[in-house]
Image 1 (tube, rainbow, N blue to C red):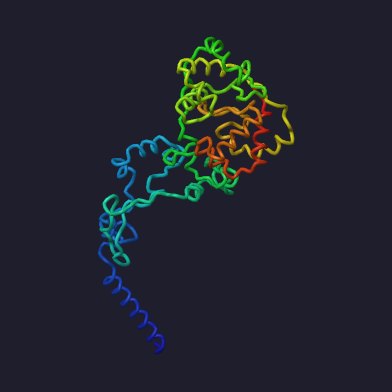
Image 2 (image 1 turned 90 degrees about the vertical axis):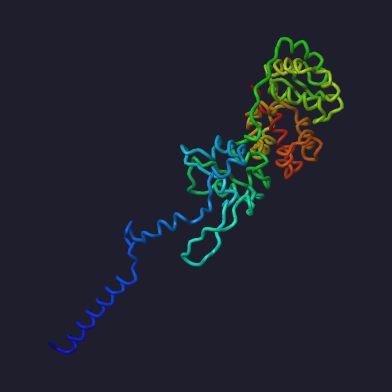
Length: 345
């Protein structure tokens, strides 16, 4: 046998012996017990301190918040949407670094010595899932951030623990009232609000077709001083809850009338602006929730004065103030013109 062939065979045998010895000497006995990893690692992983504790860990101290979450869209397995507490608030435990591949079973825990983070910039957090992007599943609610609510934080309109639109304000049931009795009592309102609840440039807004729940709530706010108007504040003191319910039922059953003919140019300018209002007040000026006012048929001047009052703080409402703060005077006028000319049904 040639010498170089002999040397090659010896080298191959030596490599095989060294490889076999290395496998026997460096491979732990539990390797491949459950697959391509050490079987002993299963016990080590099981003993590792969890970083994410789960909703059950939060529930004893935050039962109300967990209850809101559990009934909301963020806990909807059917839709594939499970957003748990620690997704937004961070892990409830931490681990102390012990080196590479070393199990850590210690570290600070909430609430003993670890504070959970409370998101302050919800626009940045919520849009991780809800900003409109190409390829995002259609069933995922998506928004164009700049057009949705400007620089306003998401939590102004949405309950962060149950963020279906405007769950912050649950819709109240319409109050019981006698429309026939309300018709008689409404004569006193006609001086400012017009006969049949249609103002026609009188000092007060039209009431025909207005949501009954909103009407009764407005009377209460004038009575308690939460809203201030020299005329209405004084009048509301003499309106009992029964009277308010009767008047609300009467006006809600009437057909509103457009305050002015539809100005196509103004309507076109206002249509893009009122996209911020549509979620609550409806694209056609009819509110989606009976606790909010319908705007169709209200006069342009009244709407402008009301919007200005929200902007300057005369009327206090965090949602309205946030949405309107970036609206220019020209945009306010266009939005008012749009709703003033909206058709009534």
